[in-house]
Length: 162
Ligand SMILES: CC(C)(COP(=O)(O)OP(=O)(O)OC[C@H]1O[C@@H](n2cnc3c(N)ncnc32)[C@H](O)[C@@H]1OP(=O)(O)O)[C@@H](O)C(=O)NCCC(=O)NCCS
Image (cartoon, rainbow, N blue to C red; front, side, top):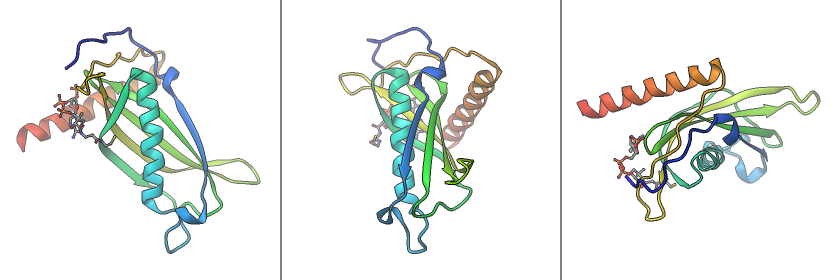
């Protein structure tokens, strides 16, 4: 682990990332709904920007821990992706990306996809580098951090058993 950067804790608010995309025919599957792989690419980009804003370094995707498609998204839909750091550990960060579709007439948003990803910060030498911890600002921040920590501990326990 590179020790070259140890910085103060930062609130998750500062790295929240929003992206808006229009679903075009080239993003569609044979049913005219969005192709899952295209959506996953947007999720990965949104998550990476969020992680990089938090650690202010290059961050690579270590794992897509969870990705659930709740509702189909169609060609012509406008989707909004929101990324947020849930947990910051030694060199890794858990980022949640939510994808919502906007109803054109009303602008009402419906959650279509929820994903959790792990990103690892890299030093200039390309080695895992320390990330700033999260500075919780409210109950929701504390809840998200506790849940991320529990998920990480469960993953590490599974890896120890394997
Ligand atoms: C992610 C990567 C940098 C980790 O390197 P590594 O040598 O395994 O590093 P370490 O074992 O020291 O682990 C570093 C961190 O990654 C985390 N990590 C490693 N593998 C992981 C996995 N499968 N899931 C979640 N986290 C993981 C570790 O828990 C550790 O976190 P911590 O420092 O907060 O405790 C390396 O596996 C890699 O480069 N993978 C390819 C990344 C890539 O190409 N992504 C797609 C393009 S962006």
